[in-house]
Image (cartoon, rainbow, N blue to C red; front, side, top):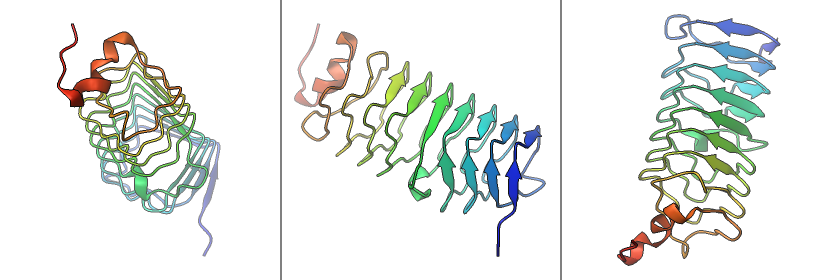
Length: 190
């Protein structure tokens, strides 16, 4: 059975907790101030879509595709991006709350996280080469076997990244972020 196809549609202020979200292929669509918490988004495809001021917290993403999508001022708490279709996964996040989300094993090179709260996000085994973390709070985020080659974390803060367990070759960090690279050694930096 073919999924419905939606092209250049705009959805504004829709509460999908009352009207269930329709599984389908969405291309160049905009979702503005929509409520999608705990929604079933599985098996849907989003290509070059924009989500602005939406709440997708705890939405189900099994087999969901996000390709060249932009999330702006969205609430994305507890999302399991690791259950998404990893093929061509690409997204930008601006002023979003992704706390408690999982990007375990996700290939997300050249991504942008700008002014985001990434507290307790699981980046284990993620490929984040050349990703830009601009002014992001990474309190208790997990980095283990993560590729951060040439990533830019120079304006982000509260991270703890073990250089021995992660690939940080060519990554950019600021001097004030140095304790986050050395905290496992228990040394005091003044």
